[in-house]
Length: 434
Image (tube, rainbow, N blue to C red; front, side, top):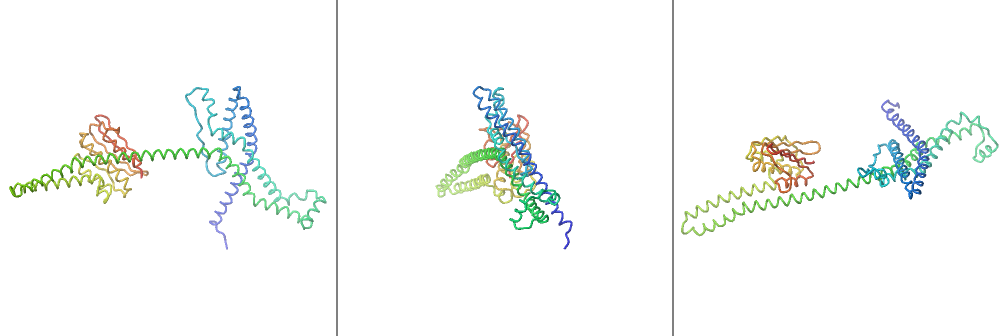
């Protein structure tokens, strides 16, 4: 059975990664030991001297200098542990004091928690550094000595103590057996070298990561979670506000439209019932008028239902719904809406109402001659733009007509912006996430 080049390539790659990582871990541990001794002496002595003389204010500058020096060692260590862990370590955000006087800026590091963690690492890193250094040096020394024993064993003196030890171990004290025994020890240590060195390097690297990176990363995650919570609360408040505005508008529209027509319809039918005997022709005219009012009421109810959940949007999608919306507008609409795949119902509904509300405001207030509606799908969301050539002056401030629309867009996780200088038209843009 032969081995092809394709089969040998992954093996060579694996062996190359093995030796490359072994070299990285070895130099990390060996260099880390003297650095750990230096940081221990500097950090502990600076901290002790600064604390002991802080009462006479001399110690504060010493303490600040020690903290800043520890920060420098920490930055170097973050760069060193990246190759060991296989990823680049992020640098934490240190507290910055600006614009509050030179004295407060000088002593600002004293109030920074991450800087104190850097000092803690500088003082106590010698413990994993020393342990790792001992294991790595021991394993490398015995592995190299055992594997090369045939080259130098002949030059060693062999005392009677050696003979007694070999007899206790159960083999004859000959040069061949002695070399074989020492060589087997070297093979064992060489075979376990990678894992021992890797373990020592990971021990030091994770100790450093825990103090220099993990706490800061946890704070960042907490900050992101709090920000997401605030955004969710804002979206919830916007959704409640948009729903309340929509319900009030629907109630007002029903009260001013279909409800008044139904009241009048009931009154007309009552009059017609009274006149069927005395004046049948007049009664039939009243009934005919009532039928016309019924049809008008049905039209108004259909229009209101389209405002709640347009059937064409549900059945045929956003592009068809916007086409129908543009056809009903009293101002010419230039619609640029390429065919789109069906989106999430909430996104389609929000995009539809953005265009519907914008076209309604244009028809009522803008005195525009033309409206341009554009819908564009991008990698992260949907961009809806409505631009007119009217008088401008639109605003998202509370009390204006677009405030409720802004709440609806924010409830969907999007952003609504309005550019409407006086006399230069209005451009409304909604960005909706998918």
